Length: 269
Image (cartoon, rainbow, N blue to C red):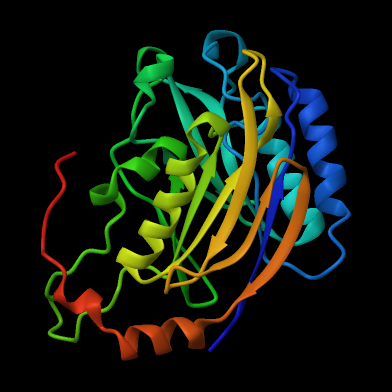
């Protein structure tokens, strides 16, 4: 069963300064010493969590997506993180899943953070994105989505071909700008999502003060399907690579087949 190498980049972000962030992040990515397959950046990695999309948004053929294509190709990695995108006169907090050959998928953040008026500036998405790499299925999510377990829940429904049900995905990735003042919720919910969905979870957060003087402690984490913490780091920048093992995931699901007892449900758009 193939293993998957994942690199988390917990970093300070230059407030609303795309050029500085892209330059800094490229240096960190190119300098990753060990082989890796997926590199995860924080939410709105090119700007910080800004509520000024009119000034900062780009098209999908803009500089930041082009940068992602170039870096993914140069390093031969899958690169993911969210950016501010304008499309059809609307603004999206869009997570992009960039492949090394320049093909990509994207997920528009479903749950917009009304406490910071994100819902007044951005348009919510209504479709999940579950990516596939080396036989791994990866559910891609953004920050505030973490608080809404139904949206990310493993679905349990009969397959039309009559085969046995299988979990939808093996890993959830959350990219975030989650403040230290609510980091207990961040850490608790990351563990909960891993336990209830019997999957790995990678949560990647930024560190430092943003332009609104809100402090972020990072607390990026990688958690296994039993809810055990494989990695975490607080308050400082760090680039960390770990290897996730599919056989461990399958062993947990065989020994504790709780996912088979889950409720069937549908989610309205």
